[in-house]
Image (cartoon, rainbow, N blue to C red; front, side):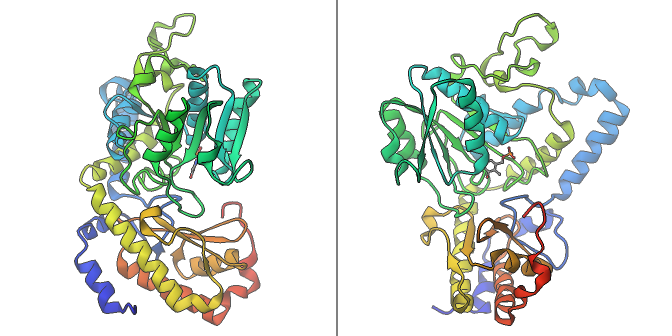
Amino acid sequence: MTIDINAVEALDRDDPLAGFKIRFDLPEGVIYLDGNSLGAALHASYAEIEKAAKLEWGRDLIRSWNTAGWFALPLTLGDRVGRLIGAAAGQTAVTDHTSANVYKALHAALGLNAGRKVIVAESSSFPTDLYMAEGVMATRPGTVMRLEGVDGPRIEDLIDESVAVVLINHVNYKTGALRDMAALTKRAHDVGALVVWDLCHSAGALPVELDRCNVDFAVGCTYKYINGGPGAPAFIYVAKRHQEKVSQPLSGWWGHARPFGFEQGYDGGAGILRFLSGTQPILSLRALSAALDLWDEVDLAAIRRKSIALTDLFIALVEARCGAYGLKLDGPRDGARRGSQVSFEHEGAYQIMQALIERGVIGDFRAPATIRFGFTPLYTSFGDVWNAVDVLHDVMETGVWREARFAVRSAVT
Ligand SMILES: *Cc1c(COP(=O)(O)O)cnc(C)c1O
């Protein structure tokens, strides 16, 4: 199949999501393919942050905790994130970072399944999940971790009657491989295990159905596909059926039933409230709130259709035009099994990405040898995909990526 620019332009003309791009503040001359790491800025978020800062903080001062709804934001925004992840109201809170929420969810799950000592996870997991699991194990002697890729090739085969909880990434951060949430959750439940799904690379990238899949716990960030802003707080989902039975170890005052009672002794609040710990970053929550206003207008099925079309197109063009240069697809070829990103392996991956960034095509690098491109249907066009592959082709054909300056490493890759 040959794809030409006319076909690509036709895809953009027929794109029902094309109108969303102007709502984002994207710099001229940049093709941004890193929304899976940090979503782009919305014009509306600037206005919302300014309002929260100048009027609510500057003028109304401490009264804004009540009058501007600051105190309630973790739960009001939680319900709005809930719509993106298939969670009915009252089960999601926006709070803390994903790492802390993994810690809380794992403890809560182990507490519910107190007779069992095994955590199952993936060696290919985003590392912080495993680091946090290590921290959980350090406080619960006898708890052990069983890892896909170390203790067996398939996570399904590691889940048996000894397993308390399965901690699993919905979309793999490196390869973009998408897990079957319904099937794996059922597999765990069949042997009495609970599940914690990490949705960092699926929330806002594709429809997620936590309630329908009968998920127990989920966590995820809002600064990737949801476009909440750098360091925007994460979310945690706890199924209604578990809420009155669970506890979490970061038992701070924001999760207390009566925080302004200033009582002695912790008494966890009702429902999802008890998963809060302490004071939250209001300006960041307000940037997120503006992003969620935009999401209220978005059809997630349309997001998924365009995401698969963008990523399919990218793979086809890279393989057709850059196939000779040793780039090897590192992830699913079948769009139905892919999140909203595409990765390629190459020994010069780091330098290639630096050369692309210098030419305005921004993706990222993941050690040891992966270049990663995120496709965000709200602000990426089919023409962007075409142009990005043009630049990649140029970088590969000229060999410019071999220049020494592209090998200089920064802290964040
Ligand atoms: C980005 C990401 C995180 C980030 O965790 P933070 O605590 O928010 O820094 C966690 N898990 C996965 C799978 C991620 O992709």
